[in-house]
Image (cartoon, rainbow, N blue to C red; front, side, top):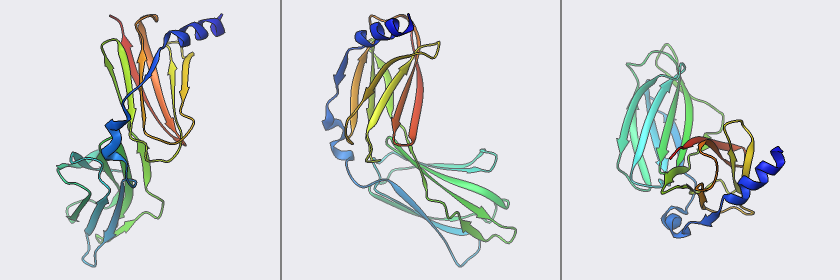
Length: 206
């Protein structure tokens, strides 16, 4: 019965491609950040390249995931700023840069003398697609810079997979899912690209 129900729901999810031109201005190199500790203790130079939009947010969190700093920046392409962390306690921190539908992060440590060490691990890259309910349809958009195929899985409240959509090749993703004829309730949209994933619950009760 579950397989039959899945097939019915999948058939009712009418898919339409969104205009790829939405991402025309976003197709460029990957968003990246670098941290360069300075000879003066407690100072580090942040450089962000390939900004996807002029609406960027800088966030710093401590090891407990508590936000200790946030700033909105209106820059395009490249952003540079010197940070002085002399007033921060020693410990592990993480820079998060959110620009458009993309996010990158980088860890760093401050020792008891104020010296800054940047983690050797490669910067983490997350995908942050735009998923929204509009006029009975769910729009999923992703400016894909991971150079890997994008897939969207839809699960019902019981956790059953009701639809799966996969792009056969790497490109920006834009689809519209029609929920008009399916059972009312909450559905989880899971967007995946390579090893990265993002989930959002959409409630459709009207």
